[in-house]
Image (cartoon, rainbow, N blue to C red; front, side, top):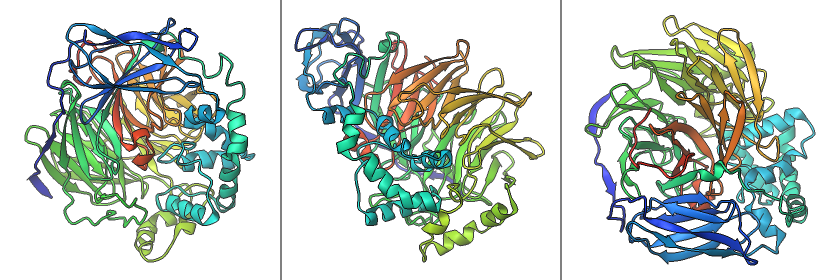
Length: 601
């Protein structure tokens, strides 16, 4: 163990933004078409600062907008976006103190349907491929495995490739744990190349594209929302998970550069600091010897998930380092805790005794670490069969052999179940019980926090992923490959499921959700559709909030003290994201924030 190891923090300057934020500073105007008619639901975005922050609002029924809360006297870059129209980009706009600067835009309709198709979120393209899969088994495993770490249907994934390229891609997927069964794997190249052929895809996607009802604007209440995006990291980064710290700071782990970021959203443009996480003697690619790293990756320990304990310290799973890290914000120091067993610590949560509970995805375990006593527990999750149990115990040997032999075919075998059951999400019930999900096994499990006994329950849907409890003790679970969320009652063991409403229906891949316990509103990642989605548990109504950046692969969700929703854009690789740079995002459902500084709930 290394205690109190200090690393120098680096402060990123916030460019030319020196003044304070005044909510009256900003822009006010309208967005009209060439005939002078209002364009409803257009997204108007102002970018400022270096590294950048972007703030986005929606136009109202009259095409009007107010983009407020911006820094004064800043050279703003404005972008206006609406599906069906050419983007408007305009730079050099200045704001003045205590007033809104007039700013009007005229948008020009597209005449080329291919350009309209390119504006559609990835899930629209994805439907073309899913429609070619006749077997429900093939469809389920394809959704679960081929959207594992990135959107399926974004511009980088819908390229037509030759067989050699496809072979490399599928081998890379298998090494990263996303394996298809042999039959589907052989058919994938033709499926992709035919589904995404522009000659057939564009007409299918843009049928009726000149009609007013094509790509309708969001609802009136959604158009009250404000979206802020903060650049974090660079093209080699992967901002995996983020949290809102009780101090109001935002912390995010950059998995591919072994970095912890701290963002202060109370500073105009957001001040950023970063801290290198100790790598000790862990080699490039980590203890698993991953040979599938992107060429620009610097990942040794692979920080993945993070949470703050009752004292404000931040605990982090180091997935490829097989360690936990503790970061103390009071002196910016790290403590590294090696783990006694298991492979690939994944998602963590902290109980009311400050014990750290975490899933261990690679070897089918759940771990517990008690910092006060130094106690470690590595809890083996029951296998579904004797063969699976043997396979899981052989994983260390497979990892060692994979450094010398291409085992991608073996790793991809097993009916699309990948390399194992994959313990994934985890949360702590109000009564202290520990609940976790198994992504590939389609099960959830309960652990007694005192005896460590495990009980497993099959889910009536596929691919439970990252789940959370509400204030009443119900467990809310996203079905990643089943296009739904489900409410599970731990007392009655009953499930009640709700189908995601994202259009086209059946194309959403809800990676994660969280519950704002002040209202018990469930917030879900629209991981394949560039959205965040709320579910009112009282009225059982979904609300979809479009996000302004294309290729927004959202991960975990958190809330600040004002009820604003935070998440990260974590597509892998990051260069697929529009601008090629990851961000953390804040959605203010009720409009312009009244305060830039906020603490956690």
